[in-house]
Length: 181
Length: 187
Image 1 (cartoon, rainbow over the protein chains, first blue to last red):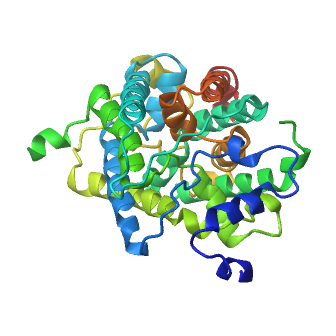
Image 2 (image 1 turned 135 degrees about the horizontal axis):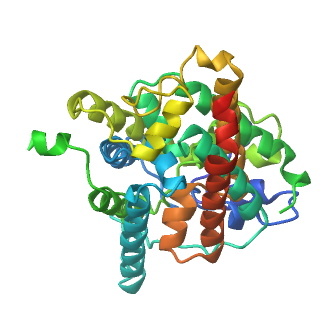
């Protein structure tokens, strides 16, 4: 896209925010900031391999702890096993302590940048979307991360599920302004 | 060591490692843990269709593709190198329920009798894979995040909206698994 070529390194973030916020009656960034890159720094593309490494660890845990098992997800929703509640609960506690420590000691990234956090605003999408996603989670036995991991284990038919999830994302984008938020 | 790694990992080990991904991503490059946005970036990169929601500089989010690429590779590594041949221990009540619906093969991560290319063309398979996948994609974007972004990253940052979203994920799952899925499995 031509406009991307005009972006200089320093104003990329501001321009991106403008692109996203254009013509919107509510603030997209606050609704949807969780995976938006907050770093203002520019690095060569191969720096991204550090995220690949973290992803590999995540993928191994997914399989070895059976988090991507359809059966484990059914057990969770039928309250027949503590396993998934234990996994998510431990992850949240460890994550909370980590975030608290990062804030408390103003820990910076390995490149010396301050770490940023954003408050999220409530909107009705978290209820409606949450319920719909929960239903999909129980049907497929997978949230988005496990979808990718299931394909990695060789269950190639799950690529159909993933394609359908991408289609769902697109349809949401298409109808976004007409949906209650 | 390998034998130890090959066993199924307990919940507190898995939970602790997943929890540590939150600070790892923050400290390695100020990135917020999340997976479902990948699907938005894919839309933005491949089919933006002049939709405002997909018009942003997705190239800045390439790190998320690397992250999810790692998830796929990690799953391959675990399957090929760390595999133990014993099937997943399924709760007895679940196993007997599923047997009633003709699902008797508990060997894989996904039940082969439900998730296969053949069953894709049955009503049951279509609902579970295509409709289910659609709900995952649509619902996570509508909610603004998935289990990673809301339930782990959002709750770690003490965000009330993420707590509400997590409760709704669980409520939706309970409704589907207990009230609706039995009818779908009967198809």
